[in-house]
Length: 237
Image (cartoon, rainbow, N blue to C red):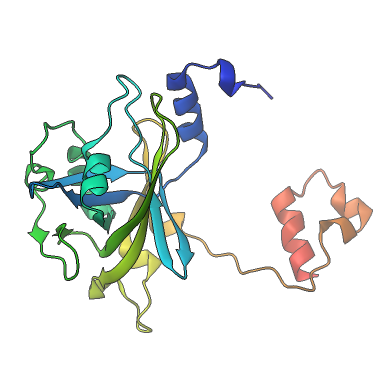
């Protein structure tokens, strides 16, 4: 096992190591607006859902590692604390990547990427019509982790309205994971598509499972069975 000391690493190398190991990461295609009314769109894979009560999404438009500048999304949510977080599926992946280019202030990335902007119901930023799920959010807080290169800026966004494409729902009205066709970010320029045989299900463990430690010793020490195999046996015993 090779060891690394984050304190002694160049931020570029540390950034690559972190992103290469932590994934796949969901992608927030964040639509914001500045105080002059200019629209902005940019994707962020430092993103996830963190609470259902209140419904809270958090993403991080980090400072640029090369020159320590801040991104338009960060500046916009400080001035106009609203954001639409559009979910990225495979059908819009290349458009999403195109919207990540470093366009000058005031350039409309929605148009540059060929997306269709539609009005939100409760907030000013536009929604992306092509996205299968769109979250209208009010920004509750922005937490700056530091002022150094590549430092994160956590945007705590409370969901106030959700729009879901009906074609991705199953007969019970739930989002069908085989239909939404989500895309995640890996390290470097690598992405992953969550569909087809890449999807699998694992039920929650039985509360009365015996645990791997209670399996017979000859089973636990097997050179044929993997750790996953042992866990399956423990849950079914």
